[in-house]
Image 1: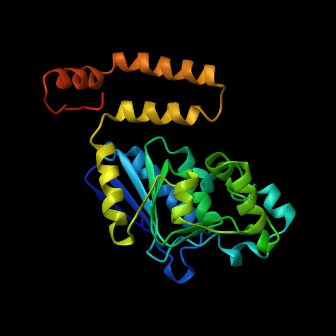
Image 2: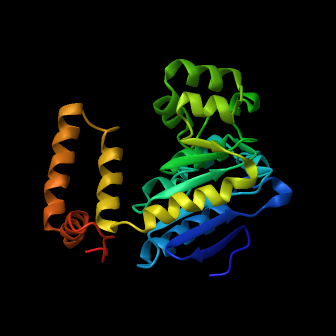
Length: 258
């Protein structure tokens, strides 16, 4: 399909999605989120794409949700339509790995979108935050939940109640981002990570992602049990045999994603 608010391309086994509303600092609106969901659907269905990268511009990953779109809405409208559900959460339901490459502002909905991805690589100029209280509202795409899980109650309360932003270095120390790299190296380093993932066995990568995500939903005992059953299931996967055989033979494995 033709996109107006995002750029989509494939680089080897990596699908790259770039938010592209520069005049609005990539503010998220319903049309952009519809296009983003469609792009993710396309990469999920493409057997040649094994990992995705979601990014914005050097100035802003996404400066927030589009306030102009929200301003005229009222409670009956937002409640009956379940505004900001469904397509707005598509990145969080992606089965294949998806990495957020964040530079500049990732505020409000932008921070929430980045947190929906599996991990965040941040440029050293990144600013992240949930400033919705400045507008008389609260996060609506999971910010109060995912931020708390990422950085803990105290720091999440600090950020959400005071609307304070974190710079990239604090975000890394707090565990919100996986690593911080120079702005000039952001896409290079993110693509290296994505290409590494794309070089591995897709069944193993999907199982590993599912196991980690499960840890947020169940007790430790049930999580370990879930992990072990997935581990056992890898012994029915051809790539597991190939990987261990290649290790024993001191050669590079040839994964077939089966």
